[in-house]
Image (cartoon, rainbow, N blue to C red):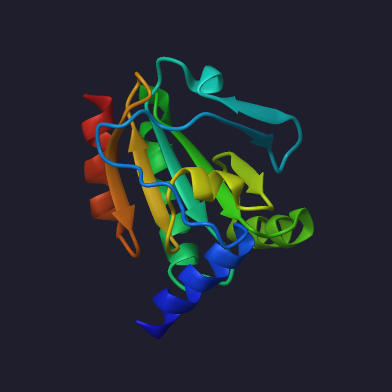
Length: 162
């Protein structure tokens, strides 16, 4: 519980201390534009128009993020040919820290930079990890706050692909 409180405080500090937005199931996923770790930029929702998308908000200091990102990779590899997209949005860390962590993990889905936690704030993230499941029309259909295993992630991902 202390870890969750600490994560919330760090995230609030990174967001300028302002309260995060409240994003509920059935709401449109907020648009954003940001840099990709591997270069270029992403303009959501245009970049994934008509495709289901998982938006995963994480940081390398989050003890649950690493094992979950590996589990997400397994599910992503199984379903990317069916149209599943994943964005791993790093909240509040600089590019070198993110690059070192991702290199060690070896995940292949796109990693996005959110150094000022602006995307995390727009999505109402209060703790890490937080994962949003967005349908092909850009509507939030699922949300997991905190630790989830491969089975939970896959169940939500399959719901998007129906």
